[in-house]
Image (cartoon, rainbow, N blue to C red; front, side):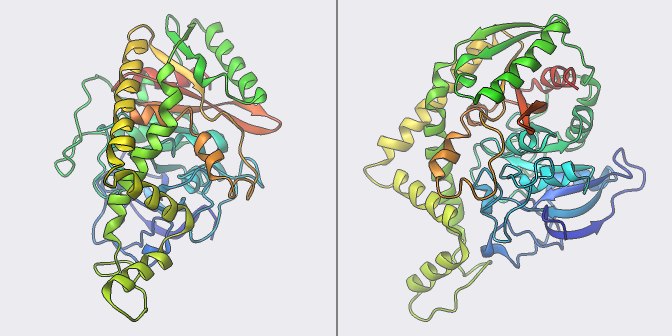
Length: 421
């Protein structure tokens, strides 16, 4: 079995759909009827969903063959795909390095050619980070564009399912398949735009204004910054205009994001109690002892860390000090993005401020991993669409360029990204 997958399978889709003949990997937190869905956790090691997620139904109907459930950081909590209970995934584009996370298995499957396409989920960069690290394309859609029905929740207000693919046009074609309202997800909305996303991959940036937020470039490694600047020069040569913009709110984004995400995780993961489904401890004793032992055995260290921090942030006496302030910061971030996107067509930054870590390098420094999300988490807090597209290399390691658009501005960022291919 490829280390990109937790479970390999072969589920054929419709014979005449737009994705007929294509293979697809599904991140292992997206429900597949009759195929186990573990979320990369021992807590759900033997869980087999009785239903398909909406996006799985849609790729089936479009003709894609599902070839496996892709490895991931446990419950989506990580930046390297090293917190999975089955172990890490290697990076096919940079062997010996992490593939990014938490959708690292999805990106690795595409980069290695184990699947033509993949679905991941993005809570704070979990599609864009592995896309950048593995040298593929990843799209985080506008919040509400793609149904989350069947996505096992980590942080409901932040996460979106999105495509990973070798090219912008292929990622856009998969987005055409999975996007659209769903009666089973009340947060979904119809896209007010016209035309397919695939048609938007026309490589045209002539006349486009690209804003470059100084705060999202200054902190990047020198090699990453040089690759980014080279990609921007390519867009300018094709007729785009670039201008520096100021987004002061993003300097508080990492703190706000982790307070909100961990708080929502604390609430969402409370359901794993050893009674209803999932792992159950063999410990004797009263219910409280059994409950504690079940969660101690079933969850990994990073998940426990986030549950504890989220529970603390929501506890009496600290809710207003941490959670309420984080929500206020989120509002500021949204307003900041609205302000600059009223003046430019898209925003551009390095997707990740650093190249891929070596396997095992960062496991003992969770704070460093949290800070590595500085360029991606603001987009989730603002509910906006973003795409990561390959932008060259530094020391032989892939670098990604991130483009951010206004709500339902997928066609604009797809058009700009395709100009870099």
